[in-house]
Each structure stands twice: as C-alpha cells, then as structure tokens.
Image 1 (cartoon, rainbow, N blue to C red):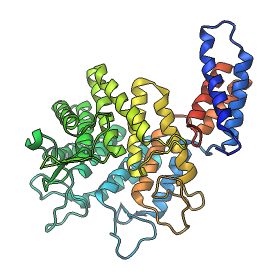
Image 2 (image 1 turned 30 degrees about the horizontal axis):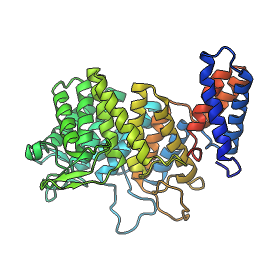
Image 3 (image 1 turned 30 degrees about the vertical axis):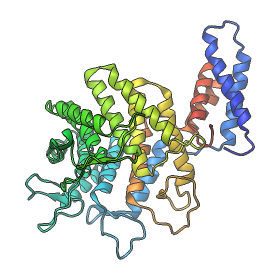
Image 4 (image 1 turned 180 degrees about the vertical axis):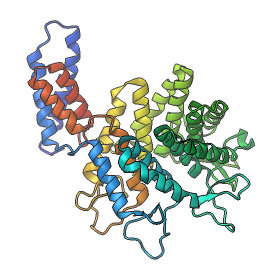
Length: 433
C-alpha cells in the first residue's frame, strides 16, 4: 500500500464496511453512506496497485519459467537450480520432485491438453528414483542404485498425495497403483516405540510431524478411493501426532526423538497437513469436532505466520503453499471467507515481492528483499509457487474482485459491491494492522 494511504483512512473504510451489516436489521440504513464506502474502497485498491493478472495467468507464467529454465526433456526430470554449478546434483531430490509433481497435477486439472503429456513424462522420469529391490519398495531421495539406500518416509508420503490426485484428475489406474505401493512403504515406518508413529527415515532416530501428518492425509485420500482399511491408519496417525507433537496453542512441533526429546520448531507445513487431516476426518465422519479443531489450528497458524502488515506467510514457498492449501480446505468446509482472504493476501504478497517481474520465476526467500539479477532460483520454490496459483484458479484474484466491485457499484448493487471490495481489501498485501 502506498504511504500516502493512511491507516486512519483504512479504519474509516473498515467502519463503513461493518456498518453495511446493519442494513438487514435497520430499515433506515443510509445507502448513500454505503456507496461512499465503496468509493473509498476503489480509491484504496487503485492506490495500493494490486498485482495484475489473474491466478491462471500467474500459474501459467510460473510453469513456463520452470519448463524453460529447469526442465530436461531428455531425462524427463528437473534441475534443482537455475544457473547450475559443477557441485550441484544433476537433478532434484525427491522432496522437490514431489512438489513439482503436485504442480503438474494442478496444471493438468486446469489445462490437460498442455500439461497431461508433461505429467506422464515426469512420472516416467521418476522411475529412476524407485527402489524395486528394497524389502518394501519405495522412492530413494536420489537415483536408486544397488549400493545405495537413502529413503525418507515423508518424501514418499508427498508422492502418495500426488499420485492419488493424479488418479483423480486422469482416472488412470496406474497412478492409483503407484499411490498404494508408495503408501505401503510409508506405513512400514510405523512401530510401537513411543506409543506408535512413523519414523522420518529408516534410521529410526525420530518420528516427525512432516511424515505422520501427510501420511494421515494420504490415508484419507486412499480411503476415499476405496481402500477402506486406510481410515484406521488415518485415525491412528492423527491420534498419535496430536498426543505427541501438538502444542497447547494447536500448532505442531517438528519431531520427537526415540529418547523422547521434542524438537519444538514449528513449521507452517506441519500444522498445515494436520489441518487437512482434520478436515478430511470431518468430511468422512461428519463429526463437527474435527472441523472445529481444523479451524482452531488454522486460526493459530494465521496468528503466528501471517504478517499483519503484508499478509505474507513466514516460511519459504516450499512450506507456505501447503499452509495455503490447508486454509483453502478449511474455507471450503466452513465457508468462512477469512481463510480464503488470508491465502489471497499471501499470494498477492508473493507476486509483488517474491516474483521476479523482469526475468520470471520466484526468488527463494518468501519476504520483501532486494535480489540481484544473478540470484539463483530453485525448482522446489518455483514449483511451490506454481502449485499455489493453480489452487487459487477457482477463485477471483484481487484485481478481479476490484473490477467486479466497480461493475456492481455502477449497476447500483451496493451491497454486492461492498462485499466484493471488502474481500479485495482483505486479500491485498500491504493493508492491515
């Protein structure tokens, strides 16, 4: 928001917007006052220079950057960075691949003609990471080989989610088969030490939220696709994670060691996947306690990670896109607009300050900063940004809200205009606090 737009004016507008709610109970409500509020909203949004282009355009631009700068069509894999250096691995680790796969699934859902071939090509490339010779096959962190075994249960859990969604989009049974086989490996990481839970990796040193939470969500996705035994796994995994890794504020710690020492760092994506697990359990059981818990965790996450001034979330994109996805699921379940607005504010912030408007792509730091032209960009961060914008294509962007609000105002649909302007303001970075 430009400096000349004072916080006092924003508060005035906020008061006028709240006054709109009185119209349903006050027959003498002054519609002229409401019209004035809408006019102020227009001035606010213009002066704050909302990021142009809708979400689909932003998603396409980000994907084009990735495909142009980070994709090796011969290997059917992605480079980890732009401006590759001699010491860099030739292709990305499995974690980054999982994020990129989810971006391609989102892209295929919205533009199958363009992206479905790329989805299938990348799925074929990922076979290089699959260790078929292991006692329980799974994906290695890097290329599978007879003399190496470096697997992470969380890397595999992300792929289960991606494969399940790919099946939902394409209806190709091979993706469902991949999801089931990969989930088998993920669940093999469970034992009864510490009362249950899945290890981060087979070295059996810690049990982490970053694998137990996505494993629970993956179990719910497979349950919805017909694997009835997976509901028990979702419930068990959620119960264990809640008991061992949830703080009193509703947020989740990182891990607990086999010596019962808790690493209390809180990351957006850990809480995000537990939010999604609760939404999923609500959808299956219709028990309101799960939705209430999802909202409690979501509210705590917004309070901790959303910058009250800019709206940007505190972690980098590779974590933030998962928190955004969780908030969108809470919005769809509750229809409380504040969750959608929070995600749109973060996306608006990203396009203003993290997106490289000159050369394309996204920087690696999800905050306002000066970046030199030769700063490298990573595949995982750009894939995460692409996934975020694909998720948002179902909704109106800030600029679209403003235009729709102006049109409603011209048509003298004052209440509708006020609602659209209110959403736009609450979804615009640099307004708040």
